[in-house]
Structures are given as C-alpha cells and as structure tokens.
Length: 60
Image (cartoon, helix red, strand yellow):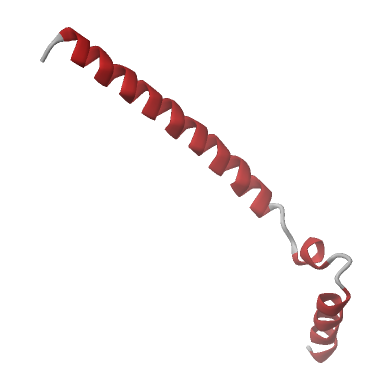
C-alpha cells in the first residue's frame, strides 16, 4: 500500500466521520422536536380529532 492510498483512505474516513456527526446532530434535533409534541399540539385546529378526544374525555 502506498502513502497516496493511505491518504485517500484517511480522507474517505474523515468524510464518513463528518457525515456521521452531522447525522447524529440531525437525529438529536429531530428527537428533541418529537419529545416536545403533545396530543394538544397535534390536534390543534383539527376539529375532527379535537371532537374525538373530547368524546374520550366524556366517556372516561
């Protein structure tokens, strides 16, 4: 194996590492957004779902 080949492998591995770090950051951000979701936020301004959940509250 030549030094040029090793340099190419190192460059490729660095790009892969950078991409994985970016994906990790994106996943963390999306996970935080998902944890912030509530039924109230999901059903806001949706009369059908709001009515269904209101019926559930009455039945329990």
